[in-house]
Image (cartoon, rainbow, N blue to C red; front, side, top):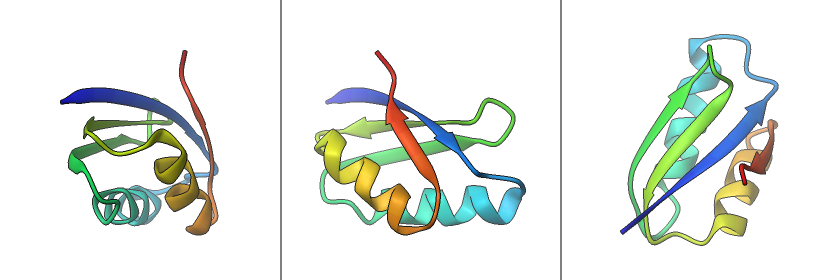
Length: 68
């Protein structure tokens, strides 16, 4: 199992955090997802493809990029 950290922009409240968390948890291979409004990032554990994670976030209306 690996961990992927994504920078997420456009979140302004806890509703945003909940929406991003729900979207990430629906991606096949995600074991857990932690989203931080304060840090503007999401940390995902599991075997999910990074591109699928980014697409799930973008479909919710937020912008995301994988951290190096």
